[in-house]
Image (cartoon, rainbow, N blue to C red; front, side, top):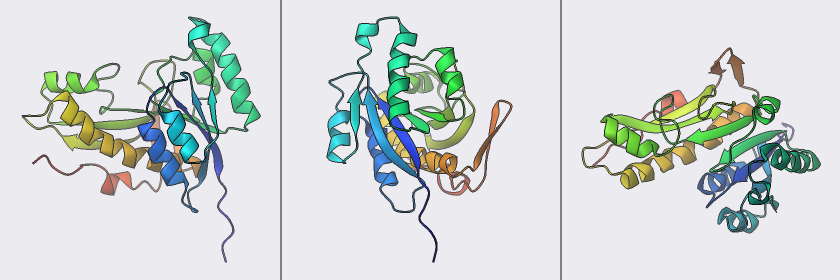
Amino acid sequence: MTGAVTKRRVAILISGRGSNMAALIKAASAADFPAEISLVISNRTDALGLERAKAAGVNTLVIESKPFGKDRAGFEKVLQAALDQHGIELICLGGFMRLFTAEFTKAWYGRMLNIHPSLLPSFPGLDPHGQALRAGVKLSGATVHFVIPETDAGPIVMQGAVPVGDHDTADTLSERILEVEHRIYPEALRLLATGKVRIEGDVCRTAGSAASENFLIAPVVS
C-alpha cells in the first residue's frame, strides 16, 4: 500500500476572472495531485476569481495594490507576509496584472510560474494574439515559464500549440489557446511540485512531461 501524496502548498495570484486559477484548483482536487491550492490572492477587490475560489473552498485574500501606487516593494512586503503566514512554497500567476520588483522575483526564482498566451519568446507583453495575427504565423499557443525580472522571459517549462487559421480573429484564437492553457498549466505545476524540473542556465529541463506527447498541437481549425 502506497503512502499519501506529499502536497506542496501553492498560492495563486489573480487580478481578474481566474480562468487558469479554476483549472489549477480543479486539477489539485485530485487525490494524487502533488500540490494543494492553499490560498488565492487578488490585488483587486472586484476580481471575479475570488468568488470562484471561495465556491471551491479555497482561502482567499485581497491585498489591494492601488493604495501602494508605484511602491511595488511596499506591496510586496505585505504580500510576502501573507505568503509566509500560509506556508506557501510555490506561486502560480493567473492573470496577475502587477509587475514585481527584481528582488521579489529573485527571491522566488524557480518557485514562481506564469502562463502567457503565445509561444514565447515570440509575442511577449500585451496583445499577443493580435501580434500573432499581424505576423501571419501559422502556429500560436501558450507557454508556462518561470518568472524573472524581465517580462515574459523566464525559462520555459511547457508549451502547447494551436494552428492559426486564415479567418481567425484575436477572440477566436484566444478562445482556443485558453483551452490549451487549462491543460498545460496544471501539468507544469505537477512537474514542478514533484521535483521533475531543473534549470540549467537560462533553459528549463523536465522529466516525465506528458507535453511532448499530448499537448503539442490542439485540435485543428475547422
